[in-house]
Image (cartoon, rainbow, N blue to C red; front, side, top):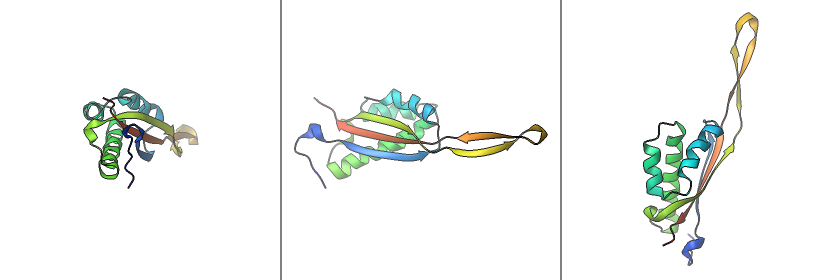
Length: 121
């Protein structure tokens, strides 16, 4: 367990890999919560109609739990310093089309990482 003496240097991380949502769609949600305090971000994600909001909400909850259990911080005093959505592997599937042809369907995945830091007062 690492407890830092200088509170500004503490960075709590959490990652979610291989999420079954397109990175382009997940970035729309990530851009909305970047820089917000954790409580405001969770409220915004709870009422968002986008599908990626549920996955990002769970990831932020996980990062907040990491902060409380591993770094002895209070989750309400944290903000989202960085949230990054990277492209994951693409699942390639085929769909039958007319006259014996096939069309390719790409099911995209993404990797999301979150960094939480304490709010400066």
